[in-house]
Image: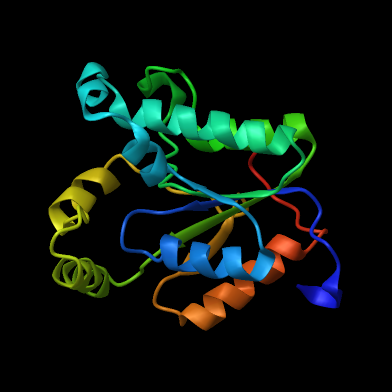
Length: 196
């Protein structure tokens, strides 16, 4: 971090569909900023199998739990990194009648902390497909997303509006995206738009 100054209390959310580099960036940020991370995958893994069949909106419920945990960490005075897709689906289409992105923003506002959303994407679909295929080959026994699953999911993924978040293209080098993200997160003068 610049000048070795401590990071003010901050909520950092990493958004994007599978295979775009969220988890890679999250690992680097955790090491650099020495912050705890909460992921939707960890929440899902903690749910006993006998409970997963009782929700019509399973992923919405998991994100609801995740954001509750985020709020609790902020209440204790911690900064936190959150790794989730953050679909941004219109509030009228959800069971809970809230958008995951809007809810994260409102939590940050209520707690009086910096809000730093980072949106990761890949601008070349062929590269994106190959990265997903490569992950499947690398981790054959892990439940990694397939292109078919991601393609279905992206039909419902609400595009981020310019100014709402930092946009990082996964075609850039990991080092460049990491450096850009750290600058964005640690800059006290970031002005986000489209949230009011």
